[in-house]
Image 1 (cartoon, protein in one colour):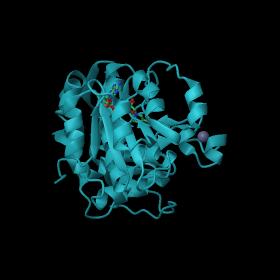
Image 2: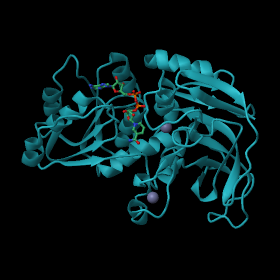
Image 3: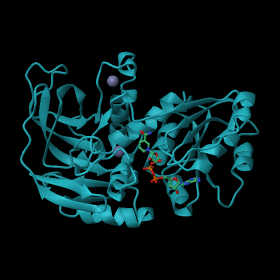
Image 4: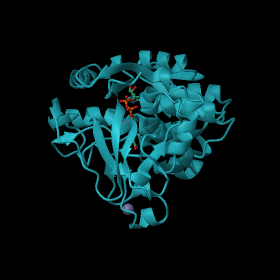
Length: 343
Ligand SMILES: NC(=O)c1ccc[n+]([C@@H]2O[C@H](COP(=O)([O-])OP(=O)(O)OC[C@H]3O[C@@H](n4cnc5c(N)ncnc54)[C@H](O)[C@@H]3O)[C@@H](O)[C@H]2O)c1
Ligand SMILES: [Zn+2]
Ligand SMILES: [Zn+2]
């Protein structure tokens, strides 16, 4: 079978591998579509310290069940269309015991710690699949996983209708967070340094945009919110300066969620956290959020088609990954058509 593999940093190829055989409790899935994620690009670039090589990439996966244990917990059958919940957890550690499986002390993410599924076939625990509606688009299905990341930030931040939600970083994660915030009835305010990304945010229905390189973001948020500032600030850039600025943009008694992965430490004026009594929460991957994300995508409440840059074949995936790494501004989301029968 075909698979997309990183041999080492900066070397990505399509390889021929043996079709995998499911272990006990696993399903065999014929993969139809696989999204290319920023983390796949980070793995290609060699900047994600969690990735070991060689590594098959891909964790944004949709496909058809080809084999599954008959007594599987969710009652799946051969032929069912599913997406993959790609965060493998131990089920035994403290965070797992309280249902925070995304914080598992030995979390294994596909394409990072273990091989991913950008391949013709993939084996995965039968209880970590999520059923797709029969008539859902395969391309949309591959974009459900990144939406779960954004939704997790929204849930960790307790976003409510009517609130102002600043999102820093208009990449796929921030854009999806903005679209989801609007779907929740909140007012999204997107901040970035790249004008094209802010234009894009506007085009997908985000109410307010701020170019923080040219405008004073604090003054603009003050103006937009009538002096209150933002009830929730979602940090989706990973830039140290952006993390620091969240404390200036959040309101008194407000919340901040940190989804972006900074490469270095960020010094923070903790007196502002005390003075404003701010809740700051990490947001890592997602837990129990696939069904809601699927529903938002399927109903079009979050129209993920609008963030799709293009669909490429398996043959073109390696060159596309190389190009995304070199020209990130040209891309928002790319989905790989793994199976040629995806119409
Ligand atoms: N917590 C998780 O589980 C999780 C999952 C996926 C991605 N991430 C992280 O989320 C972040 C966003 O992911 P993405 O794929 O959308 O990335 P991306 O690189 O496509 O987008 C980041 C955006 O932030 C903007 N930016 C950079 N510095 C800025 C600054 N100082 N102020 C304002 N904007 C700034 C960039 O212009 C870009 O548009 C990354 O840090 C990524 O590692 C975290
Ligand atoms: Zn992803
Ligand atoms: Zn665990």
